[in-house]
Image (cartoon, rainbow, N blue to C red; front, side, top):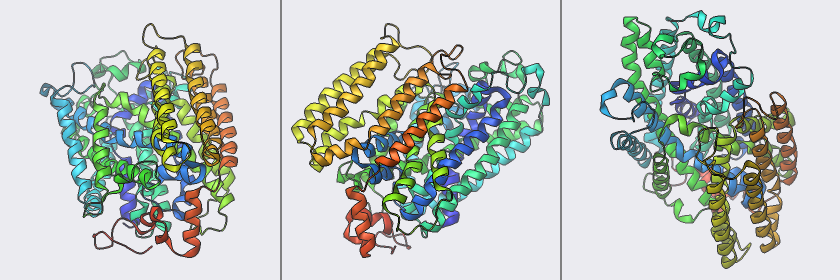
Length: 620
């Protein structure tokens, strides 16, 4: 793939369901000031993307973002962040399928696609139709990257045209009064919700597709030149497009059609428009031509999310593949079909993604989880570029990040803030799921690398798994979308102490049982544990916790503390980076000009197929 295809790939992933739903959710959280939220979210993502520009140029690798953490910080950090990234990647096709079905339900309300008075997919029609979309994503990926890229090229053109036309048509029904005193002013809910909306309403989620050019770097024709350019260009285009769409949507709101009191912004999320915000708004305008365009928008609501869904199916496949190449997962996930696609990883991606339909399959319920798990892994961009400057200063860098220390720190802190803005109830679910990776580390990776024995890993892993499930159940917060835990749960103090104790004890026990090399893996991961446990505590007592009306630590002080935690973790992480075995092997191969000497880097540089679409060795 060249620059145009890589940019289209990123835009194809960026422009999905986010703009179709997040506009309503953002208005419900921040009011008219949600326009500012889109700009803030885009800038945060741009800082994060910049930190990956240099790394992607010097190390274009298939499944890149799941592989960089292990290269610079070892297997324990690599397993935790790789697992978090995998969870985010496999859930995106599911949420995009949910988006398509939900929008269809606003056009065909009698089909029984969603449960009554909600946005949750109904069984069997809604969920089975969503599974049908997952099957479509599967087969588009199974038959090779060239088919995927060619189909995606035309879909991206559609996905750019329709949102642009939507902005123009909706703007025809614009009402300036929706930004005035009659609705509470520009920021009727305060300043803090402007930042909360960035993480919780789908704004950052809507930008996350920028990573696709990085993920497919191993299949790019000129990765060192084209991957960074495609990444930055796609984010800039998205910032402009999304900000205009939010401005037009807010100005086009008809309160009577919504069925809520004028200025009651917080009620938008449960209003009649929730299943299809733009579709409902165009009909409510009472202008014939707008209602006609609304019918076309329904089909875009199928095509746009589907386009993102099949790209992310490839992303999650390459994440499985990349973690297998790094020996974090079994080697069977690297098996290729005749089209050059890791088909066993693709099957795993399809099956795990389907699990996200089990509990409350709704776009609004999953979007915060995906955002937080993804951005948690993005902290490694800022840290990784600084570590590689220190331990591999002589490597060829087609693009060098200017003002590296400033921009890498900003990228790290930006990711930290987005994770913090996601709120306590989302963050606790994310971290509970992320630390399940410790079990995989103990059962598979550590014994395979000889850090500890199989019996030690199995025993410690079983003990931690049992304790972790017990704490999650007694805490009562996991998979909760509200502001209160399950009735009869532990107090917050007891829960947090148990949560922290379990993480620290299992990490310490792993260190004690491991050999010298295994202990190094643990030693270089404490900065990550400090970061997530500190943010978890702050998120409970801060502006975005359970008591946001009367927080113990109010805005903006809570955000400043989060930034301080991020800066401490950044410099700690840079100090903790070291020349891992994988990085040493890669350096030796590059220095010797024998990339094929190291199997786990061979595919990264040669790509998964030749220029004619067959499997085999395209030159670096």
